[in-house]
Structures are given as C-alpha cells and as structure tokens.
Image: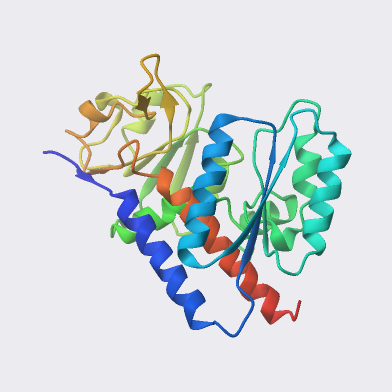
Length: 285
C-alpha cells in the first residue's frame, strides 16, 4: 500500500481562491491590510515575507513591509508596532521571527494588539484558543486542520499523537484537535516509549525539528501522517521530520516536504487577516 499524498499546494490555492472571491465581493469596503515587520537580514525570513507579499497581491490584500536594521533597539520595534496598532488600514501585524538577541521577543509579541495578532501569539489569543473562544490561531496548526478537513480525514474520535510541544505548533495543534473531539497525546524529547505511542496514532503530527526522525516502525498501518518539519540537509536539500520514503508505504495518507504543510502557513495568515478585517468592520473600527 502506498499512502495518498496530501497536496498542500492545491489546498492552499483553494483557500486563497476562496479569500479572493470574498474580498472581490466586498469591493465597497476597505480591503484587508497586513503589515510585516522584519528586523535584520535573515534569509529565510526575507523569503517568507517576499512570498507573503506575492500572495497578498494575488488575493487582493493590501500589504506593507517594514525592515529595521539588525541592531535596531527594542524601543524602535515597539514604536513601529504601536503605529501599526493605530493604523486603520492595517488589520493584521506579522512580526517575523526570530528577532535579534537584543530584543525581548515576548515583549514585542504582546505589544501587538490582540485584534491584529493574526499570528495568534499574543497571550490573549492563546487563552482564547485554550478556552475554545473566537480569536486568532497560529497559522501552521490552523493549516493542519484545513489539510485534514479538505482531505476528508475524520478528526472526531481519532487518536492524534503530536511529536513536539512548541508554543507555535505542538500546543496549539493539540488544542485544535481536542476541540474537534480527537483524543490527543503530546510527545516530546523526554517521552518514554515514543515509538510505541506514535504507532497507536490514527493521526500522527511530526513537529520535532529532526530530519527523518519518524520512521516506518513508528507509524500505524493506514494512519494519516502530517509532517510539519522543514530541515535543511548538508547537501542543501530539504527533508521533513518524517522518513517519507519508508513511511509512505505504511501510512494511509501523508504530507510531503516540501509541498505539504508549508504552503498552508501563508494561506492561513491571509485567512486570519481577512477575518480580522471582518471583525473590525463589525465593531465599527
């Protein structure tokens, strides 16, 4: 048996098409606006921001970019975030991580208005996620749910195992799956009998940051495997956290790297920005 490959590019395009159609239908209102704040010259961050700008143009979202020097002070970043919080054209603020070491990342993320926190990192939105209330959810976990839903994979009643407990992926993904009535197990580097636990999963989410860590013996026959990892190998090629070539012969469905979860992150960022614009209009801001 060879697993069905879940096509993240196709599903992300469907999300963008849906966003574009909705924005075009509301031409009488101000378009959603997204601002990206980049500090320094991190190559991966620059690529992400460039791709974000291109996708914004594709769907009709107004975008702005602000690049501060590597040695920018924390007060400079806070001042910029404060201006964007007050700008009615901007509905979403993306502070690109990682930030340089002289800047307190948590202080910056919590300076973003919760109403414009389309990354879902502000403590207010974290609390809303845990409580299953309306708020912004981190884009990669939200993309995982969209992949599962678009692929017709049942979440309710499934045993979902997440390998990785980060605030950006593992924990929020666990909340989202739990709210959809999955039974959720979170594993990490200190978990005993990790392979045994993984092999019990109906849905296995790998977000541990180790190339090809999940092997065939860790996967239940017919399971859905979601690979969040993007690791650069010494030869320059990309590899996920899953050993794709072996696992694809055991899983029922699997996401490739690249082309699986990755394209969903920006798609869900755009979706969150549109949602922010809707909430802003409803509240008369």
